[in-house]
Length: 281
Image 1: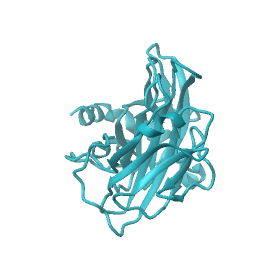
Image 2 (image 1 turned 90 degrees about the vertical axis):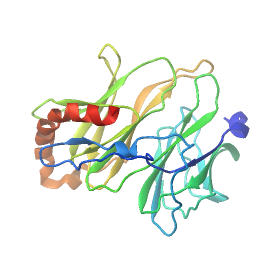
Image 3 (image 1 turned 45 degrees about the vertical axis):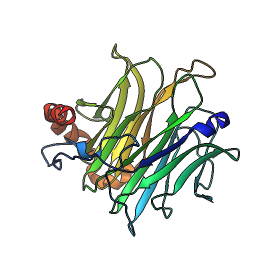
Image 4 (image 1 turned 120 degrees about the horizontal axis):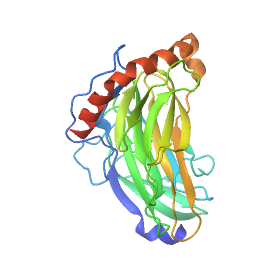
């Protein structure tokens, strides 16, 4: 990792799509609605105003397959209390402005930096993900995203796996539910979902499950689902896994939790064609 430090300064903005399409809030009749405003973008996007005086919550996820852990800095200030391990995520609230640099260090040596060129001009949840650039080298890469302010829970879906293995994702009822319905989750997209307890499943092209994670969705919360792992051409390989963050407490759903397990699945199956249209439009 240390050898890649000199090549890994990435300049970018925490931003949504420059030309948003209309996004409907999910109603009592729907459990999933596409939020194409929040699709992942590359770090070349710069069509956004700078934010000043707003509350920005920064969530950092380590999707870089390695036994090593990163310390996270904003400028010279260390913001991580403990090193962030692989598949680990943490939320911070550091003061940030355009021009600041988020640096990831390993043993006191820079493994990569993300230079902030723009920030949203509103209160927002910002996500920064560090992951492996390719299966041949140890270089790092970054993805950033800012969630729109919605009442409904949002799920951003990202694929950081490097290698030839293919898989698709779906969201489905929890195993304890009375029904068994599922919907496809497309990589590089964001959907809104009603409160409830779900499972996110990764399947290979033959339909065999390769990874699964529970996702407890709460209103006004923003989640990331990340496929991680690497088929390294040199060094250690890491299998496909799913990273979900944050991990909400199902007890917050109170007495409605058991009802949501059943009713959420009944209502979201009917929205498949709508999701496909919005995401691919």
